[in-house]
Each structure stands twice: as structure tokens, then as C-alpha cells.
Length: 298
Image 1: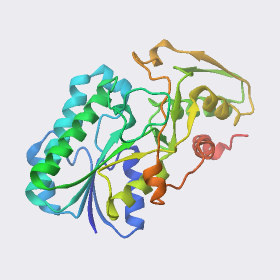
Image 2: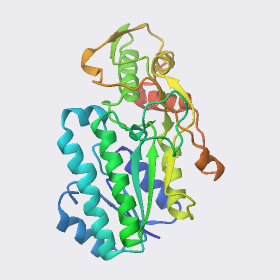
Image 3: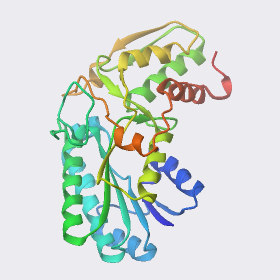
């Protein structure tokens, strides 16, 4: 199984490469500066040289906040970059199976778990870019007969995720205060939102299973099926510490538009037996212990 992972040095990429290699894949793991999604010739050479059985494109501007700061770059990387990858696959490895990572941010807001059949109506540039990616995937399936599976992945976290995301930011701040041995204050954004958070290791397991097995559908939600209030998860993290920690809201961390509730209907992957279901509290403790390191919090 010859597999190319684009965006392999990102947060999810490292976990996916380990997951694939442990299952016997020969992985070509590439990222900046080896490849640039917007360099068509570079992507073309990559696919020409590797002729893979599988391709996973993880390379993206994946932060909603970052997408608001630079919508144009978000569209360039997430849509034009993906088109460059699909064109190169069609040219050099037309029988390869491709996994494109989308997002729950594609969906219209609703107060019940989101099924793959639910309406898509993104409320931010990142979500819009992923809808466009998925639409082009359908076009390339029809025009070239390509095997393309799209995920709509809900929030996932773990050791190594950037602190521009809420949970790793909370973990880092709480662990830093804990290591100081003194009471402290952490800065946060919106704590009232409800979100479906998963362990990154569970997510990459699903990605591998979607690659290796026959697929009944072309789109799969990837998430835990459980929504948690962000403020409750913050209190869980604070509970790992032994010092007093207070919370202050930082206007800089607030999004221009924020969805109050988002939860995954993950019945497709659960029915297939692909979902491991690590509890998010276990994931947060893993992150907290790692952040504390050898100094051994608590």
C-alpha cells in the first residue's frame, strides 16, 4: 500500500502517518517546504514520482479564526490547492483512492446532531472553502471516475495541536500556572458554545479505515457524537491543577460569528466499527500531563 500524505507535518499528519505505517502502508510524507499546494508543477512531480495507491490531503488553512483574517488565502490553499492535487492524481494515478478532509463548519446551524444529509450553509470562510472542495470532489468523480472520499470532521484535539485552538490553549495556560505553584488567571474566548470534540488518535484511525475499505458513501462525518459545553471542558482542565485559577474573557479570542451548538451524528462510522470512542476527559488529561512534562504537575 503506497500512500502519499500531504500536510504530514501538521498536527493531524504525524498521527496519521504513524497510524498508516503501523498498518503496513509505505508512506510518502510531504509538507512545506518539500511541496507547495499552489505550485502545480511541484504537485504534478510528486504524483508522477510516487504513483500512489492512496492519497490523503491534510494540507489546509484549518482555523476558523485564521480564515477570517485572510479569506482569500484560505480559498487559495483549501480550494485551488486541492484542485492541483486532484489534477495531478487524475493525470498520474487515476486509480488511486483519495481522502479529502472537510469540516463540520460546512453545515448549516441546527440544534440537533448533524447528519451527512443535512444542509450545508457555512458561516465562515473556512467552512465555505471546504464546501467548495467537496463540490469539486463530486465534479471530479463524475468527470474522471476518480475514487474520492470526503470527511466532514468535527473538532479533534490532542498533544501537539496549536494553541490558536481553544482546548490546547486552555491546557497550556492551566499547566503553566500549575507549574508556577501560584494562583493565576487564564484568558479565554466564548465558553458558552457546545461542540463535539474527539481524540485525534480516534480520528486518524477512521481515516485509515475509510482508505482501506470499500465505501458505501462518498461523505462521512467523523466525530464523537457527543456535544460538550466549552466552559465545562475548561473546568475539567482547571480541575487537573492544584492551585486556584480564575478565568477572564479576552475579546481578541472571540469569533465574528460563532455557532452556539454543533454535534456529530456519527452513525455511519459507528455502524462500520471504525469509531474507538476515547472519552474527551481522557484526552484532556493526556494533553495536560504532557504539557506539565517532567516537572510532574500535581
